[in-house]
Amino acid sequence: MTDNTSQLLNPPVNRAAYSDRSAWIMARCSELAYVPFEQGESMKQQLRDSLTELRLELCAPFERGATAGYVAKNQRYAVLAFRGTTKDFRNILTDIEIRFYRDRTGAKTARGFTEAFGLVEDAVTRAIAGLDSSLPLYITGHSLGGALAAIASARLRPSDRIAACYTFGCPRVGDTEFAEQLWKVPVYRLVHASDIVPHLPFAFGYRHTGDLRYIKSSGTLIESPNSLGTSLAFAYTFVTGGKKVFEYHRIAGYAGNLQDWALMRLKLEKDSRLSERPAPSKTFEPHRRS
Image (cartoon, rainbow, N blue to C red):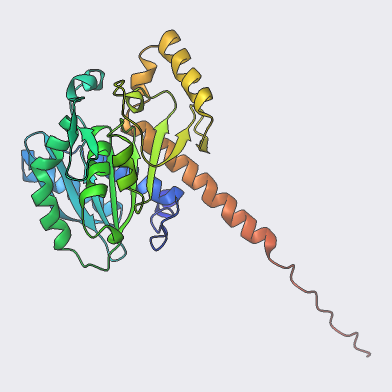
């Protein structure tokens, strides 16, 4: 952790609005969800140490089948992070069971995502129940982990304790009814340039949830970009530089770009505050006669 990035570790937690610092921290938490803590104490310690750099304490790792993640906290907020696919992400389409699962409310989600979340739902519920109820809860994940984060944001109760959900390279999760279940939870969906996964699954009936933040290949972040423009950019990249659409999906790319963006914005805010300060008044010593 550098002196520069340490400036980003005090994000606003008592408001639901999008935060550049929170987006970076959640990207790093999503990245750390890939640490294979279930392989032994040394890997679990690696996760603890990495979370400590983010000023977070590991509370409850969970893993069942192919679904894994962890709950972490500090004195200001808690994080629920889900692991994405650990396979070659070119095969991600095979991980998506595109048939719909309909819940009691009539909302439909991809069956594969729903079953994956069901494997750990009880463990997640217990872990969240063990937290101080006054701690704002942030839910996050990359790729398939983002899909699980969206489902968790719709399922966990009470929903009022969820401060926000940040997803990175998240595929479409469900239908319109599912998206409407998340109206109380601020969901921020980040997409890195021509990342292919947010375009999946191609099946009819799926839609995205949340407010889009688009990271251009230059690293510039745009809120609610022109959908036609991003679609054309994706099509062009897919045709002319096929594997780029997979490279843009890497969580390290998300975290790196968001770190640079947050540092730049923080510097601009500081420079702006300095420029708004009134100029110091000048004082003159009276001329003393000899």
